[in-house]
Amino acid sequence: MDRLIIEGGTSLRGAIRISGAKNAALPLLAATLLTEDRVRLSNLPHLHDITTMLELLACMGVEAEIDERLGVQVDNTRMHSHTAPYELVKTMRASVLVLGPMLARFGEARVSLPGGCAIGDRPVDQHLRGLEMMGAQVGIEDGYILAHSPGRLKGAHIPLEIVTVGGTENLLMAATLAEGQTIIENAAREPEIADLARCLVAMGAKIDGIGTHRLCIDGVDQLHGCDYQVMPDRIETGTYLVAAAATRGTVRLREADPSLLEAVIAKLREAGAEINEGEDHIELDMQGKRPNAVQVKTAPYPGFPTDMQAQFTALNAVAAGTGTITETIFENRLIQVGELNRMGAQIKLEGNTVIVSGVEKLSSATVMASDLRASASLVIAGLLASGSTIIDRIYHIDRGYECIEEKLQQLGARIRRIPA
Ligand code: EPZ
Image (tube, rainbow, N blue to C red):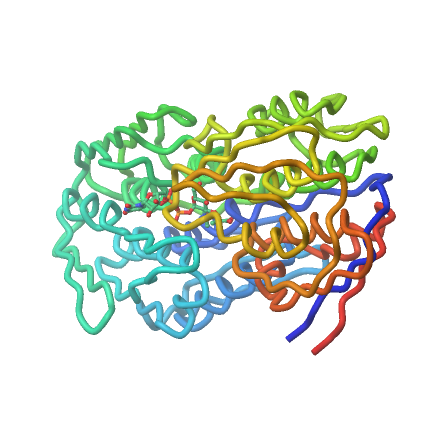
């Protein structure tokens, strides 16, 4: 397996481009199943998870033409299977997002249960409960979700029992082709859901309440193709901002949208960063200062994103003072603590909160990546540590960060990939 080696101790300086959002591109690719017309998506990030989703669509007979700028044109007119197999779903939970579109378009779907992952058991009960409320017959057999809709799905009033991004996305996509009106109450408000909704509207869907907790969808008989550009990745943006703040650097992130990460920017300002926001860029300047420790508690959007808490744990590890990070979304998403402590961090775990006493310097070590965002915190720690840090199992990082070593090299980091 590839490894990353990082010579720590340099402040990040310079400018990079932010890629398209992984967590918008994945539901958008699933949404192409809703029409027999061709859909063209641009600004797709070059990530392992995107490749997995394209493989999943391909194994069902969907054809995707990828151009040199990683735009993709999807054609499902020769689709021959409605099964999302375990071999692919087990490598990427977001595969479950094909369930709603397939059921709505073809009346049937067989999708492997995604199962748990490092950060939690991650059930999909809300996805299934909502589809049943729309008239689908749903069962579990041999580890697969078997869903069947005798006729067209029926619009329904669906009060979600938990704020779920994937659940909202699956039900939103299914509702676009249902007969009648669907109301999704307590819908998640992550910006990636609004990006999906805007693409569905471009395909002819009728959706009100985009960006709110209450989505109102009037089903239509069919959707048509469209061209759509994926929004910028707010978590990639936040990750590079935190890396720059932790290393006391100065960076400019192009093709970024500051309005997508207000909670993160507020915390970085509390940590002492000077931040300038533009229409399509963000600049952060630490002026060479050590960051101040901050208190973070994750929450559904527009609260502080769970996908940024590991990165802030690394920031607090070298900050002045004592910081706390409380994770409220996933039951096991503080797994980066052990490896950070091996690098000299002073972190105590109390339930779903970590208490971080900042130290001046971390020390290098060989560490192991465990999940996507915990891996990002190890990269940040490597940038901070004196000496060479080696990170194993970096396939986790390749799932969510496009060309991470090239982008960090552009910012002056001494980082390289050691092929297996
Ligand atoms: C999406 O996952 C993101 N993934 C995650 O990003 C992100 O951390 C998460 O939303 C929260 O923001 C994609 O968009 C591909 P949820 P998702 O359903 O949809 C519970 C990353 O690092 N729940 O909002 O799977 C669940 O267990 C990834 O890019 C149920 O109980 O998250 C969790 O505790 C990691 N029943 C909470 O809700 C359900 O039916 C939030 O999960 C569904 C979810």
